[in-house]
Amino acid sequence: MGGARTKRMPRAVREQQMLDAAVQIFGRRGYMVASMDEIAELAGVSKPLVYLYLNSKEDLFTACIRREAAALTEAVRAGVRPDLPADRRLWDGLLAFFAHTAEHPEAWSVLHLHARTHGEPFAAEVAAMRAEIVAFVTRLVAIAAREAHQDPDLPEDEVAGLAEALVGAAESLATWANATPGVTARQTAGTMMNFAWAGLGNLMAGQRWVPEPT
Amino acid sequence: MGGARTKRMPRAVREQQMLDAAVQIFGRRGYMVASMDEIAELAGVSKPLVYLYLNSKEDLFTACIRREAAALTEAVRAGVRPDLPADRRLWDGLLAFFAHTAEHPEAWSVLHLHARTHGEPFAAEVAAMRAEIVAFVTRLVAIAAREAHQDPDLPEDEVAGLAEALVGAAESLATWANATPGVTARQTAGTMMNFAWAGLGNLMAGQRWVPEPT
Image 1 (spheres, chains in turn cyan, orange):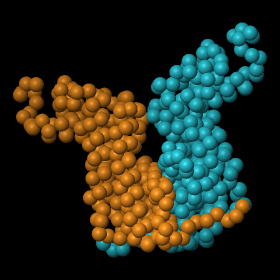
Image 2 (cartoon, rainbow over the protein chains, first blue to last red; image 1 turned 90 degrees about the vertical axis):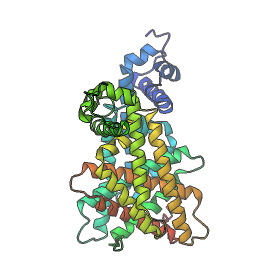
Image 3 (cartoon, rainbow over the protein chains, first blue to last red; image 1 turned 30 degrees about the horizontal axis):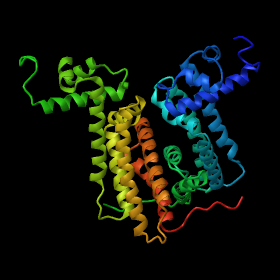
Image 4 (spheres, helix red, strand yellow; image 1 turned 180 degrees about the horizontal axis):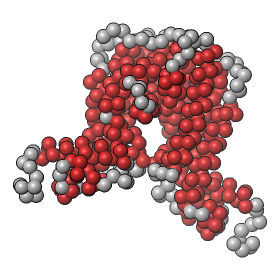
C-alpha cells in the first residue's frame, strides 16, 4: 500500500468508493460472476486494497446489502411526514420508494434479486430489511384504519396480510418498472395507488368486497 | 436394477414418486442442503435408481420446478370460468391460487424461494411460469377494463403494471400465509380482494386516486 500508488484519502471515503463500484458490478453481473478484479478496477484501486479494507468477496457483498438496505429504508422514511393523512403518507412513501429504486437500479437488483439468489447469510440481511419495511407499512395501515374510525378495528391478521400484499406489490412493480423503458417513478407510484389505496380506502371505510354466494 | 430389489411398477409411476419425495425434501431443506440419499429414502427406492431415471440432482430439481409450475398454473386456470364477471373471476383465481399454495407448501417453497435462490437454469424456469401467470392476469385486467366500458381504455403500461402488482402481492401473501398459523386460503383470498379489487374496481369505474397538489 505504497503512498505513491494510492492517493492519500481517508479510509472511509475509499471504502465508500469500493462499495459504489461493488454495487454496480454485483447488480449487473450477480454475485457469482462478479469479479474482484473488475470491482477494484472500477473503484480505481488495487485488488489487495479491496481485500485489505473489506476482507473477502462475501464480506464485500454483505456490506453492499447493508448499505443499500439502509439507504432504501431511510429514503422511504424520509419521504413520509407523519402529520399528513394516511393516503398522502402512502403516496409519499411509494413515490420515495420508486424514485430510489429507479435512481439506483443496480442497488435494487442487489437487494431484490441477487442477495436472495445466494442463500445465507445474504438472504437473512435482506429479510431483516424487508421485515422492517413490512412493520413500517403495517403501522401505517393500522393507523389509517384507526383514523377511519373502524369499529371494530381490522383484525390483526388482516392488517398484517394487507401490509404483506402492499410490500409484495411494490417489490414486483419496482422490478417491472426498472425493466420497462419510459415508465417513471411517479407513474409507478400512481399505478400502485390506484391498485392499492382505492382498495384499502374502501376497506377503511368499511366497504369490504364480498363474494356472492356460490 | 434387479427385479428383486425394485417392485415391478411402471417407470412413469415411479418417477412421480421420486418427484413427490424430491419436492418435499427440496422444499424443506433447499437445493444445496437436500441430499439424494434422503430423497431416495423417502421415495422408497435406491439412489442409483433415482440417478438412472432423473440423471442428476440438477435435472431432478428442474423436473420438480417444471411439474410444480405446471400444476400451479393449471390449478389457477381450472379455477376461473371465463363466463363469469371479472371480480368473480379474480376471486375464483385467487382462491384457487391460495388453496394450491396452502395445500402444497413445499412446492410453493421450491417455486418461490429455492428455485430463485440458485440462479440459472432454475430461475429461468420459474420466470417462464411467472410470465405466463402475469400474461393471464394482464388479460383479465384488460378484459375487466373493457367490460367497464372505460373510454379511453386504460393505457397498456398501466394494465401491465397492475398485473405485476397483483402477482407480486399474491406471491407475498402466499408466502406469508404459509408461515402464519391459522390463516386459511379463503381469508387470504379475501384480504387480497379487499386490497386489490375494490381498488381495481374503482379504477375500472374511472375513479382514479389523484394526489393533491403539493
